[in-house]
Length: 330
Image 1 (cartoon, rainbow, N blue to C red):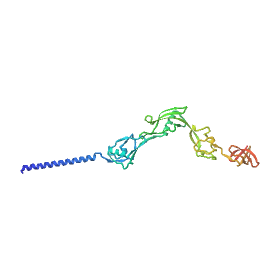
Image 2: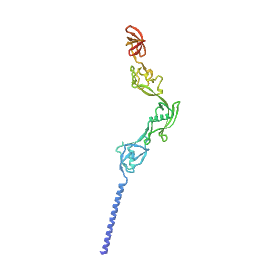
Image 3: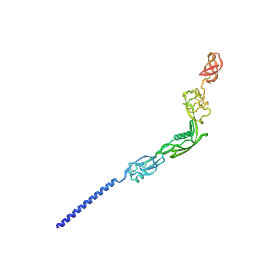
């Protein structure tokens, strides 16, 4: 082989080596690029199920049902329940959702589920009643009063992201008949997400004395046994006691319950003298004051006139009961 041929052969080998080196470098570069893409492309990732989801929106999202989602993997799944209501997503539906969004999650049993609850704000019937009363006062209603609106004033439920407030959007009031109509708006009259049309009657309220605890016949009512409660005018009949002095010193004709308005017919004066009791007879005439032992021939309460017998003279007399086993002859 000539010198020229040797040089040509050496150059060819050198060229092939360089070409092989470049090819190897290119393969290594491509490998690193593929590995980089593999590591940075979103892929299935283990997700954690949320058994109870609180939703404060009109829609349910993937992130409401699963924790540890890949970045940017959230999505809207559908409408959420009404405020305060719940819905249940079973294991089969959760599995389909996980497969659709490439989540590394499988149900451990057919019993797995997510209970989705829409957060809410509750407007109580007391709040609505207070708003109605305040509006009626501005219309000129005075004194204490209660409202009768059908059987019961309902409550209202709002979405959890709304304030738990209520306003009267419109009201009419007829003073002579004490009737009204109103439109209740929540959370406000300017933002009436929920409205409620009501009509009712105003009932005046007065305070009456009642017993703190139940008393039976023979129990004597004292001032400490009495308290006051507000009642509507229709609860006060013609002989309902409104003056506690008409109760003190009296006893129930039969057992009277605590907290109930008392009628005059429910009370009697206690029997201070029973038939056959030994009594003290008092006699007074000017400066003369006499006493004698006697026997009651009739029972009676304070102020009653009964027949008694003077045991000293065996004389029958008419006397007024003035105390416990004490009578006075005029």
